[in-house]
Amino acid sequence: MSMTRRTLLRGAVAATAACALPRALFAQEAYGGFKMGLQTYTLRDFTFDQTLGHLKDLGLQYAQFFGKQLPITDDKAKIDEAREKMKAAGVQILSWGVQGFSKNVDNTKKAFEFAKAMGFSVFSANPSADSFESLATLTKEYGIRIAIHNHGPEDKTYGRLDQVQKAVEKWPVEIGSCVDTGHVLRIGEDPVQWIKALGPRVHDVHIKDFSGPKGEDEKTLGKGKLDVVGVLKALKEVNFSGILALEYEKNGPKLLDDVKECLETVREAAKKL
Image 1 (cartoon, rainbow, N blue to C red):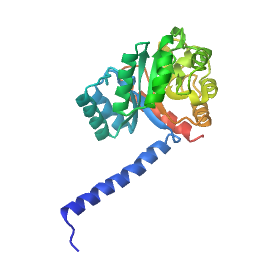
Image 2 (cartoon, one colour):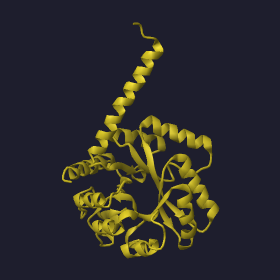
Image 3 (tube, rainbow, N blue to C red):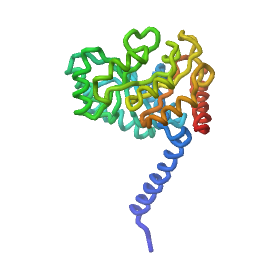
Image 4 (tube, rainbow, N blue to C red):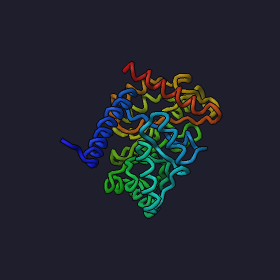
């Protein structure tokens, strides 16, 4: 029986798709089943296109982008272009931030429309106190969650666990936390305790490591005070399903090597789950 060119092409496409799924599952399994990705602020000196290339080289399928590389816009052509580039690189955007929210509902809706168009469901956020009422309504309307980001000792509003708990306690569970493990350590608290205490409100995670309270105290994962295995176990306990986003703020010629070292530490920790 002869095969047409069209039949052969269909077969090739199907074979490619069949191979892609096991590769995707294998990549996720290597990180303990977590959706391991990158907060692209880590690569802030690179363009959007360059960052997609680095994500592909690092074997990462998931990302949380930030405004410099992927600005909020209502320009359909720009959104379509970004989506096509991510698709070609095999990268899926799961969250975006850190985004400030105020009582300006029009601006908030614009951000939510952008999220809907881009296809992500979580904003790492720094909301003002007067924004929560509109956020509570819009999270329900759009199916998009708000993850309040803690910024360590300098953060007088959401730096400590009790402050985040108090901020979200009267609002729907869709308003929760982006637990930045490094900033938790910087303020002298325990990331594992944060995760367990916030439970279903943990919508986003920035995993990074510090040995002390200052910016220069950042270390590659496992070289500071972070209990990487403990963090992964706590996330399993609370059934965390969002992006586990590596964020590494130190910059320099060894940046990509340091990122690779951090990812290897997560893979090794995942073996102990």
